[in-house]
Length: 104
Image (cartoon, rainbow, N blue to C red; front, side):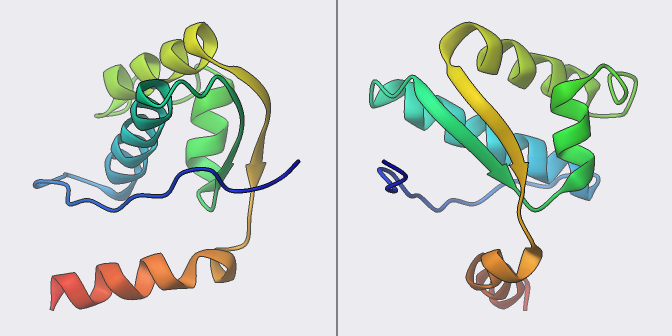
């Protein structure tokens, strides 16, 4: 029905790049959904690179390639994913503002 069911916040340790941070956050969100018994999802991200990495093997040789492959495996094996959508960053401004505050 398009309703949000679960939301969360967390802190990642030191990460070498933005793609690693995005992939780690995505994997944690998928794990939380699994823990709550959620299996039918529509994944939204404001990272076009992460979307591409989850839909193909194009980033498997990146520094976070193993994390991306593990996330893709989790997505394929544990979920019925109707789509991976790109959403404009403005739709996620609260999370970005909170991240900026945490960094200062």
